[in-house]
Image 1 (cartoon, helix red, strand yellow):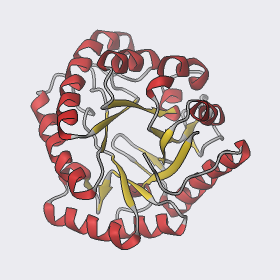
Image 2 (spheres, one colour; image 1 turned 180 degrees about the vertical axis):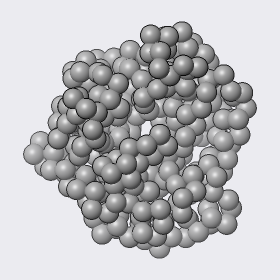
Image 3 (cartoon, helix red, strand yellow; image 1 turned 60 degrees about the vertical axis):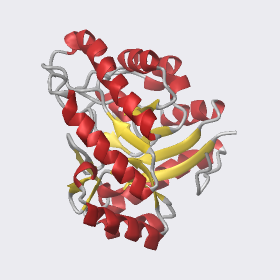
Length: 287
Protein backbone atom coordinates (compact mmCIF):
# COMPACT_ATOMS: atom_id res chain seq x y z
CA UNK A 1 0.00 0.00 0.00
CA UNK A 2 1.38 3.40 -1.01
CA UNK A 3 1.84 6.00 1.72
CA UNK A 4 1.79 9.61 0.52
CA UNK A 5 2.67 12.30 3.06
CA UNK A 6 2.97 15.94 1.98
CA UNK A 7 5.86 18.19 2.90
CA UNK A 8 6.90 21.54 1.46
CA UNK A 9 9.87 23.82 0.94
CA UNK A 10 8.99 26.50 3.46
CA UNK A 11 11.34 29.14 2.10
CA UNK A 12 9.19 29.24 -1.04
CA UNK A 13 6.55 30.87 1.19
CA UNK A 14 8.61 33.49 3.03
CA UNK A 15 12.16 34.02 4.28
CA UNK A 16 10.86 34.15 7.86
CA UNK A 17 10.57 30.69 9.39
CA UNK A 18 7.56 31.51 11.53
CA UNK A 19 5.67 32.71 8.45
CA UNK A 20 6.61 29.45 6.71
CA UNK A 21 5.32 27.33 9.56
CA UNK A 22 2.12 29.33 10.05
CA UNK A 23 1.15 28.84 6.41
CA UNK A 24 1.99 25.13 6.47
CA UNK A 25 -0.24 24.64 9.51
CA UNK A 26 -3.04 26.63 7.84
CA UNK A 27 -3.01 24.34 4.79
CA UNK A 28 -2.54 21.15 6.86
CA UNK A 29 0.94 20.28 5.67
CA UNK A 30 2.72 18.84 8.68
CA UNK A 31 6.27 18.55 7.34
CA UNK A 32 8.92 21.07 6.32
CA UNK A 33 11.69 20.66 3.77
CA UNK A 34 14.22 22.88 5.52
CA UNK A 35 16.31 24.65 2.88
CA UNK A 36 16.70 28.03 4.57
CA UNK A 37 15.33 30.09 7.45
CA UNK A 38 15.59 33.88 7.76
CA UNK A 39 17.53 33.82 4.50
CA UNK A 40 20.22 31.54 5.98
CA UNK A 41 20.94 28.25 4.23
CA UNK A 42 20.49 25.11 6.33
CA UNK A 43 24.25 24.40 6.23
CA UNK A 44 24.96 27.86 7.69
CA UNK A 45 22.50 27.97 10.57
CA UNK A 46 24.39 28.55 13.82
CA UNK A 47 23.53 26.84 17.08
CA UNK A 48 21.35 29.71 18.31
CA UNK A 49 19.37 29.77 15.07
CA UNK A 50 19.09 26.00 15.13
CA UNK A 51 17.62 26.10 18.64
CA UNK A 52 15.07 28.66 17.41
CA UNK A 53 14.16 26.41 14.45
CA UNK A 54 13.57 23.53 16.83
CA UNK A 55 11.45 25.62 19.18
CA UNK A 56 9.29 27.08 16.40
CA UNK A 57 8.74 23.70 14.76
CA UNK A 58 7.61 22.37 18.12
CA UNK A 59 5.32 25.35 18.66
CA UNK A 60 3.60 24.88 15.29
CA UNK A 61 3.61 21.09 15.34
CA UNK A 62 5.60 20.81 12.11
CA UNK A 63 8.36 18.24 11.70
CA UNK A 64 11.38 18.44 9.39
CA UNK A 65 11.08 15.83 6.65
CA UNK A 66 14.41 16.53 4.95
CA UNK A 67 17.32 18.97 5.01
CA UNK A 68 17.28 20.67 1.61
CA UNK A 69 21.03 21.07 1.39
CA UNK A 70 23.03 22.39 -1.59
CA UNK A 71 25.71 19.69 -1.17
CA UNK A 72 26.85 18.66 -4.64
CA UNK A 73 25.90 21.98 -6.21
CA UNK A 74 29.58 22.73 -6.43
CA UNK A 75 32.29 22.26 -9.07
CA UNK A 76 33.45 18.68 -9.43
CA UNK A 77 37.07 19.91 -9.41
CA UNK A 78 36.72 21.49 -5.95
CA UNK A 79 38.18 19.60 -2.95
CA UNK A 80 35.63 17.11 -1.64
CA UNK A 81 36.63 18.15 1.89
CA UNK A 82 34.51 21.27 1.43
CA UNK A 83 31.37 19.18 1.05
CA UNK A 84 32.41 16.74 3.76
CA UNK A 85 32.51 19.67 6.20
CA UNK A 86 29.04 20.75 5.07
CA UNK A 87 27.79 17.20 5.48
CA UNK A 88 29.20 16.91 8.98
CA UNK A 89 27.38 20.09 9.97
CA UNK A 90 24.19 18.71 8.44
CA UNK A 91 24.52 15.62 10.63
CA UNK A 92 24.48 17.98 13.62
CA UNK A 93 21.50 19.92 12.27
CA UNK A 94 19.55 16.76 11.50
CA UNK A 95 20.35 15.30 14.89
CA UNK A 96 19.03 18.41 16.62
CA UNK A 97 15.83 18.50 14.54
CA UNK A 98 15.07 14.79 14.38
CA UNK A 99 15.54 14.47 10.62
CA UNK A 100 17.90 11.93 9.08
CA UNK A 101 17.38 12.78 5.39
CA UNK A 102 19.67 15.08 3.43
CA UNK A 103 19.03 16.21 -0.16
CA UNK A 104 22.12 16.50 -2.39
CA UNK A 105 23.27 16.78 -6.00
CA UNK A 106 25.94 15.31 -8.29
CA UNK A 107 28.37 18.22 -8.91
CA UNK A 108 28.88 20.68 -11.74
CA UNK A 109 31.15 19.57 -14.61
CA UNK A 110 33.79 22.12 -15.73
CA UNK A 111 31.69 23.34 -18.66
CA UNK A 112 27.99 23.19 -17.83
CA UNK A 113 27.12 24.19 -21.39
CA UNK A 114 28.76 21.13 -22.96
CA UNK A 115 26.17 18.44 -22.19
CA UNK A 116 27.92 15.98 -24.48
CA UNK A 117 30.89 15.93 -22.10
CA UNK A 118 28.85 15.14 -18.95
CA UNK A 119 29.32 11.38 -19.36
CA UNK A 120 33.04 11.84 -18.80
CA UNK A 121 32.42 12.97 -15.21
CA UNK A 122 29.98 10.29 -14.09
CA UNK A 123 32.69 8.10 -12.53
CA UNK A 124 34.11 11.01 -10.53
CA UNK A 125 30.61 11.95 -9.39
CA UNK A 126 30.03 8.35 -8.28
CA UNK A 127 33.31 8.29 -6.35
CA UNK A 128 32.47 11.52 -4.51
CA UNK A 129 28.89 10.52 -3.73
CA UNK A 130 30.06 7.08 -2.57
CA UNK A 131 32.33 8.74 -0.02
CA UNK A 132 29.49 10.95 1.22
CA UNK A 133 27.19 7.92 1.39
CA UNK A 134 29.71 6.07 3.54
CA UNK A 135 29.79 9.01 5.96
CA UNK A 136 26.00 9.24 6.00
CA UNK A 137 25.54 5.52 6.64
CA UNK A 138 28.00 5.64 9.54
CA UNK A 139 26.04 8.55 11.03
CA UNK A 140 22.64 6.94 10.47
CA UNK A 141 21.57 9.36 7.72
CA UNK A 142 20.03 8.88 4.27
CA UNK A 143 21.06 10.88 1.21
CA UNK A 144 18.30 11.95 -1.19
CA UNK A 145 19.94 12.33 -4.62
CA UNK A 146 18.05 14.77 -6.86
CA UNK A 147 18.27 15.20 -10.62
CA UNK A 148 18.99 18.80 -11.59
CA UNK A 149 20.03 20.97 -14.53
CA UNK A 150 23.74 21.59 -15.16
CA UNK A 151 24.97 18.87 -12.77
CA UNK A 152 26.32 15.50 -13.86
CA UNK A 153 23.10 13.72 -12.86
CA UNK A 154 20.71 15.63 -15.09
CA UNK A 155 19.30 12.87 -17.34
CA UNK A 156 17.57 9.62 -16.40
CA UNK A 157 20.43 7.56 -17.85
CA UNK A 158 23.17 9.35 -15.92
CA UNK A 159 21.11 9.39 -12.73
CA UNK A 160 20.50 5.66 -13.08
CA UNK A 161 24.19 4.96 -13.55
CA UNK A 162 25.01 6.95 -10.43
CA UNK A 163 22.38 5.46 -8.11
CA UNK A 164 22.81 1.89 -9.37
CA UNK A 165 26.58 2.07 -9.00
CA UNK A 166 26.37 3.29 -5.41
CA UNK A 167 23.57 0.79 -4.70
CA UNK A 168 23.07 1.65 -1.04
CA UNK A 169 19.95 1.89 1.13
CA UNK A 170 21.49 5.14 2.40
CA UNK A 171 21.54 6.67 -1.10
CA UNK A 172 18.10 6.95 -2.73
CA UNK A 173 16.75 8.84 -5.70
CA UNK A 174 14.60 11.96 -5.34
CA UNK A 175 12.61 12.26 -8.55
CA UNK A 176 11.90 15.75 -9.93
CA UNK A 177 9.82 15.67 -13.12
CA UNK A 178 10.16 19.41 -13.79
CA UNK A 179 13.95 19.22 -13.72
CA UNK A 180 13.87 16.39 -16.26
CA UNK A 181 11.56 18.40 -18.54
CA UNK A 182 13.88 21.41 -18.30
CA UNK A 183 16.83 19.41 -19.66
CA UNK A 184 14.78 18.24 -22.62
CA UNK A 185 13.56 14.84 -21.45
CA UNK A 186 10.28 14.13 -23.25
CA UNK A 187 7.71 12.12 -21.29
CA UNK A 188 10.05 11.78 -18.30
CA UNK A 189 7.99 9.16 -16.44
CA UNK A 190 7.39 7.03 -19.52
CA UNK A 191 11.07 7.14 -20.45
CA UNK A 192 12.75 7.49 -17.07
CA UNK A 193 10.75 5.30 -14.71
CA UNK A 194 12.09 1.97 -16.08
CA UNK A 195 15.59 3.18 -15.16
CA UNK A 196 14.88 4.89 -11.83
CA UNK A 197 11.61 3.60 -10.44
CA UNK A 198 13.09 1.02 -8.09
CA UNK A 199 15.31 3.66 -6.50
CA UNK A 200 12.47 6.19 -6.02
CA UNK A 201 10.91 4.84 -2.87
CA UNK A 202 10.99 7.45 -0.12
CA UNK A 203 11.15 11.00 -1.51
CA UNK A 204 9.78 12.86 -4.54
CA UNK A 205 9.79 16.56 -5.39
CA UNK A 206 6.52 17.85 -6.77
CA UNK A 207 6.63 20.52 -9.43
CA UNK A 208 5.82 20.45 -13.13
CA UNK A 209 7.19 22.23 -16.21
CA UNK A 210 6.31 22.94 -19.82
CA UNK A 211 8.41 21.34 -22.54
CA UNK A 212 7.94 24.35 -24.84
CA UNK A 213 9.64 26.96 -22.69
CA UNK A 214 10.74 25.26 -19.46
CA UNK A 215 8.30 27.33 -17.42
CA UNK A 216 7.40 25.84 -14.04
CA UNK A 217 3.76 25.03 -13.28
CA UNK A 218 1.73 23.38 -10.52
CA UNK A 219 1.45 19.60 -10.68
CA UNK A 220 -0.55 18.37 -13.66
CA UNK A 221 -0.34 21.61 -15.66
CA UNK A 222 2.93 20.84 -17.47
CA UNK A 223 4.61 18.03 -19.37
CA UNK A 224 6.18 16.21 -16.41
CA UNK A 225 3.57 13.42 -16.39
CA UNK A 226 2.67 14.02 -12.75
CA UNK A 227 -0.49 11.83 -12.79
CA UNK A 228 1.57 9.02 -14.32
CA UNK A 229 4.26 9.56 -11.69
CA UNK A 230 1.75 9.22 -8.86
CA UNK A 231 0.37 6.07 -10.48
CA UNK A 232 3.85 4.54 -10.70
CA UNK A 233 4.56 5.43 -7.08
CA UNK A 234 1.27 3.84 -6.03
CA UNK A 235 2.04 0.68 -7.98
CA UNK A 236 5.44 0.48 -6.27
CA UNK A 237 3.92 0.88 -2.78
CA UNK A 238 5.82 4.12 -2.27
CA UNK A 239 6.14 5.09 1.39
CA UNK A 240 7.43 8.58 1.97
CA UNK A 241 7.14 12.27 1.18
CA UNK A 242 5.75 14.21 -1.73
CA UNK A 243 7.70 17.43 -1.23
CA UNK A 244 6.03 20.45 -2.84
CA UNK A 245 8.63 22.77 -4.42
CA UNK A 246 6.53 25.13 -6.57
CA UNK A 247 9.07 27.65 -8.03
CA UNK A 248 6.07 29.59 -9.37
CA UNK A 249 7.53 33.11 -9.03
CA UNK A 250 11.28 32.52 -9.03
CA UNK A 251 13.11 29.39 -10.18
CA UNK A 252 16.72 30.13 -9.31
CA UNK A 253 20.08 28.42 -9.05
CA UNK A 254 19.91 27.92 -5.28
CA UNK A 255 16.18 27.74 -4.71
CA UNK A 256 12.85 29.21 -5.66
CA UNK A 257 10.03 31.40 -4.43
CA UNK A 258 6.28 31.12 -4.80
CA UNK A 259 4.78 33.17 -1.97
CA UNK A 260 1.90 32.04 0.22
CA UNK A 261 -0.64 32.07 -2.60
CA UNK A 262 1.69 30.12 -4.90
CA UNK A 263 2.28 27.48 -2.25
CA UNK A 264 -1.45 27.15 -1.62
CA UNK A 265 -2.08 26.77 -5.35
CA UNK A 266 0.65 24.15 -5.70
CA UNK A 267 -0.58 22.09 -2.74
CA UNK A 268 -4.17 22.27 -3.99
CA UNK A 269 -3.05 21.05 -7.42
CA UNK A 270 -1.26 18.06 -5.92
CA UNK A 271 -4.18 17.20 -3.67
CA UNK A 272 -6.46 17.46 -6.68
CA UNK A 273 -4.36 14.92 -8.57
CA UNK A 274 -4.31 12.56 -5.59
CA UNK A 275 -8.07 12.81 -5.15
CA UNK A 276 -8.70 12.31 -8.86
CA UNK A 277 -6.67 9.11 -8.78
CA UNK A 278 -8.41 7.91 -5.64
CA UNK A 279 -5.24 8.02 -3.53
CA UNK A 280 -5.42 8.94 0.13
CA UNK A 281 -3.04 11.45 1.67
CA UNK A 282 -1.53 10.39 5.00
CA UNK A 283 -1.07 13.38 7.34
CA UNK A 284 1.79 11.73 9.25
CA UNK A 285 4.62 9.58 7.98
CA UNK A 286 5.09 6.16 9.53
CA UNK A 287 8.23 4.40 8.22
